[in-house]
Image 1: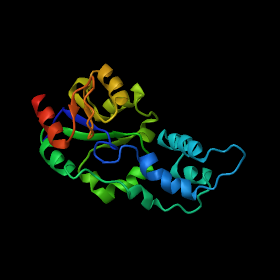
Image 2 (image 1 turned 90 degrees about the vertical axis):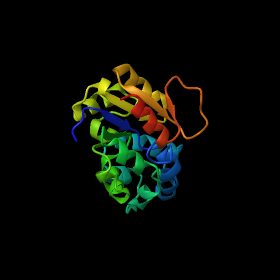
Image 3 (image 1 turned 120 degrees about the horizontal axis):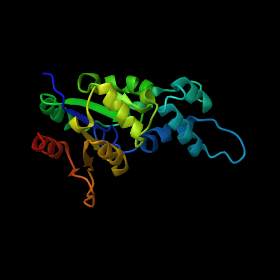
Image 4 (image 1 turned 180 degrees about the vertical axis):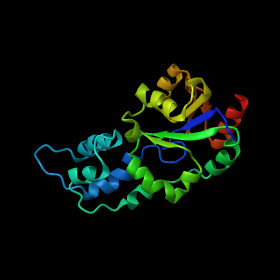
Length: 207
């Protein structure tokens, strides 16, 4: 079914239960295996800054691991995330009336390794990463380029994210926005959903 309505979901904190994959999942592995030397070297700050370069497409995955002196990385650490069990039901219902996309600050190489393990290529089209765009959320360019890739007008898009800072530029661009929080956060300037059933209801009310 063709449609010109789009739902643009964040990955971490929305379709995945983990809110910050770098700190919650990747750092335990990278911090343990990275061999970094030098006076005053802060291992975790260096990992984070190098990761940001990776997710901007400035370096590739091989260069990322080489810069941390990780000779034979086991990419299995990328799979230590949990897909929300309600996501499949949400997709099966909403994809009939909307095109479902993901916009994530991530490495396209890492996504291409991880996503087939969760069946995401058949659920989401497309899965857009910051490394592909050369811009990370909340940079307005990330949303502008996403609209261009989708062939969509901002006013035809609903942007869903667990961070208000990521929703602000989308809202300013003209998208409808929804804050997705599983915690008890109630003080928000944006419409709030705490689960995929709630999100489905909100989307249907906006038809």
